[in-house]
Image 1: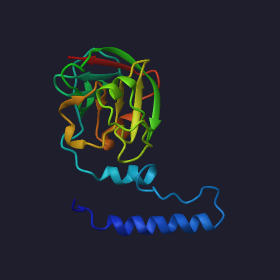
Image 2: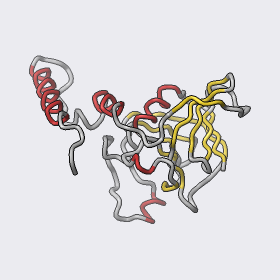
Image 3: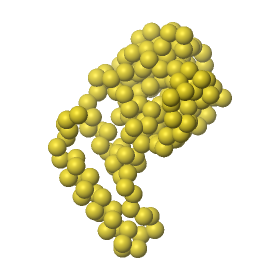
Image 4: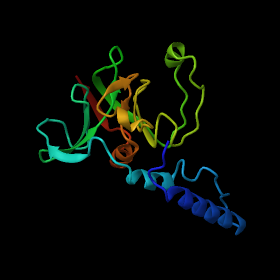
Length: 197
């Protein structure tokens, strides 16, 4: 795999050195080897990644209240309703055939750089999956996750940005890490989520 950002290894080394120096100067937090994998530096790097489906503010004629999330699985788009006839539209990946769903849920939890534990139903289908994966750039949940009620579904980031606009998940709504951070910062626990065909 070619590195499209030739300065990143030097940046990583410099940031690692800064972290190591900070660790020797008596700071409370030790230097982390995974500085570029999760946390604020990883969030910053994700801002510069290109998007196959650009995020944009669009006209919106739905009747949902401002602050509502509306997912159109047929369009493979997520709308964050702003009010005044406008919404922010994001490209998303949705559930593949047999795993798509519709209904109304509520955001019951939010997590930055979440760990991943595949549910039992997924492990039954894919016993080759790891039982646990720490949060980070390689984690399937990506940079952020918003948990939907008591269901197994989430709106989350993805380490597969090429799947945006496709029906590929086990029912979760996938976003690029760049987009999920933007949405996460707008959404509160208790936000209504409407998933439509």
